Length: 225
Ligand SMILES: Nc1ncnc2c1ncn2[C@@H]1O[C@H](COP(=O)(O)OP(=O)(O)OP(=O)(O)O)[C@@H](O)[C@H]1O
Ligand SMILES: [Mg+2]
Image (cartoon, rainbow, N blue to C red; front, top):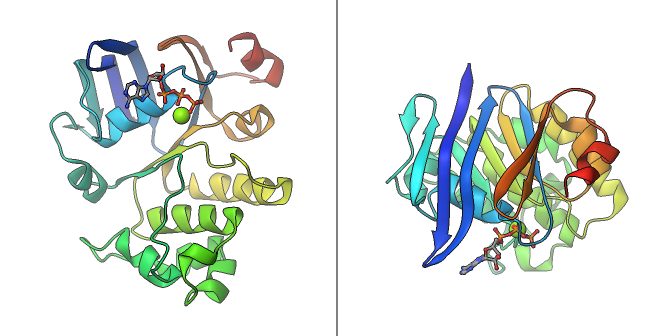
C-alpha cells in the first residue's frame, strides 16, 4: 500500500514555475531516492511535501490524508519528518536539547532506538551543538527526526560534504531505518543511491524524467541527469 502519493504536483516561487506535473509514490518500508542536477527542483519538492511551500496544483496524500493546507508542524506531528539540506542546529543548545526539540509536541521519544543507530550521540549528549563536526551534526539531525518514530522521513542531501566513513555508516542506518520508516532521500552520491534505493526518480528541470526500479545502476542514473 502506498504511504505517500503525489499526483500532478506543480510548484512555483511567485511567477517562476519550478516543478511540473510530479507523480510519485512511496510504499511503507521503501527507500525512494530523488536525483538530479543542481537547481532541478529536488529541495523544492521536499519542501512542498513537508508543508513549507504550498503546491500550485496537484495532490499530496499520506496515509490516506491530504497534506495540502496543513502547517509544517502539523505534518511533522503527523509523523512526516523533514531534514533540510542546510543542517542547521541550535548552536547554543546541547545535543540532548536539540534532540528533544524534534518531538517536543508529542513527547514520544524513543531514545533507545535513536542511540542504537547513533551510539556516538550518547557521548556528545551534553555538548553544545555548535561544537559538532559536520558528520556529528548530520547524526544529530537524523537522530532528532527519528526520536519520535516517524512514519516517513524526508532527507535532503544527507551525505553532502561528509567523509566516506560516515557515508558508509549512514548507508547502514538508512537500510535499518527502512524496516520501520519509509524514506525519501535527495542525494547526489549515486553509488549510495543505488545501494539502498527501492526506487529512484530522476528529476530534470522540474520534471520527473525517469522512474527506476529494477537493477538500478550508477550508469542508469547518470544517463538521466
Ligand atoms: N526561495 C526561492 N525563490 C525563488 N526561486 C527559488 C527559491 N529556491 C529555489 N529557487 C529556484 O528553484 C529551482 C529549484 O531549486 P531547488 O533548490 O529546488 O533545486 P535542487 O534540485 O534542490 O538543487 P541543489 O542540488 O543545488 O540543492 C532553481 O532554479 C532555484 O533557483
Ligand atoms: Mg537542494
